[in-house]
Length: 549
Image (cartoon, rainbow, N blue to C red):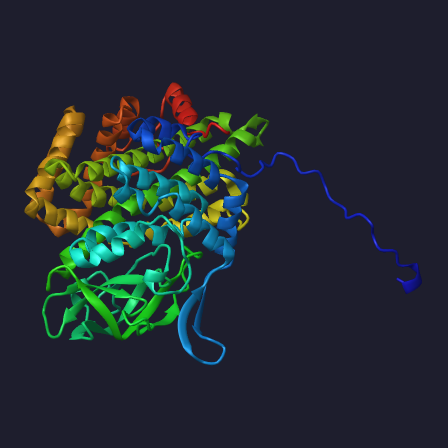
């Protein structure tokens, strides 16, 4: 075309876009969630209600959901050196990350369990459940800061200094000595490359010095390396057993501690959060708990982060279900609304049942944590409910999110869909704090060694289940007690399904419990494969749909 005849277009050609649902934005993820209303709201202490309603509105808002997208699209970057070559080992985050951290920490997500006189663990779990739907990544430092408190309390002098810092409900991202900050966060550095889940294979060594201990060693995974300190196991001199230490980012003399970040992990999901390999090069640390009792001490932290894994997985499932239901309500196919299609209704209703059971297990386990302070039976029950729920809920999370993606079809598989990020995130809680085999073997050990926990679990079943469901649960406990490792996962699955039914029943959802036990009696299955009556589908879909939808 001759240059003098070229005319630029003033209007781009397009077409009418119809039958495509807008994004699910603006829902109150607490007040509009009918499942939470049934399962959790009646158990929430009245002092926490307004906090949860307000936080639910914030995390469901366009602004906070956008922060989640921005933080994941712009992952953290390691700044090992400043511009003149001084080693600084700092992690740089997108501003959206800091907004998310400020929102969640100042709402009390990391502190309320320890500062509230009643119902604090349930309130914490619900705040974590809500914030995860906007962005799961920042839930990691929130969770570890929350979970650090029971470990710190093994060393009262250390707890006296650090507990007020981590429960201050103030977010302060500045890299400063802790006494100069408004609030602090704590991370964890347990895993070493030669051992992985076998923590007893750790080789990091601690030697007395400078009024504390000096650590030498490498940690394969350090969660949240931007934290103000890290709970970490190491061997004192040539000890066979591990001891727990707190390695702060700053030494008591006000100089930077010798903790070098070797690299940030390039993870499949959890992109907004930083995970790192670190090297202790004579890093100053102080002992937390008794010498040689490092694993029991840090297990206090792991017990609480396992509960948080249940919340994180349940929240990811809930977000996936909400997206699938929203799409089905606002999309037509073959001349009818997608949500009215018989087979789609079977799939959606079955997904609601799965999410309801996951949420019920989350709520019931957190209630045991709340009661544990004053009730020995609840304390024993909490020890087994957290890993039991983690085993099932974290295993089902990727399966459910994949089904939700399929409900949307191709549009669910593209990066513009929130389900792409949710799917990449979905396996993580199953890996964190003990993979499936570790959890199943932990449950098997508990069956033979922790009589109080097993009896408390049986008490829960006997108070809520009956007939074949109860008989199967009791028989499975005996099978678990037999200690055959090859049976551990089968037993864990059966006991977790029983826990789902028991939790739903105890939380006043008898119909849900009956449906759950009837459809999961033979184990996991493809969603929609166990036919549900039409009236049951109607009730489940209504219960699972956010009121905003």
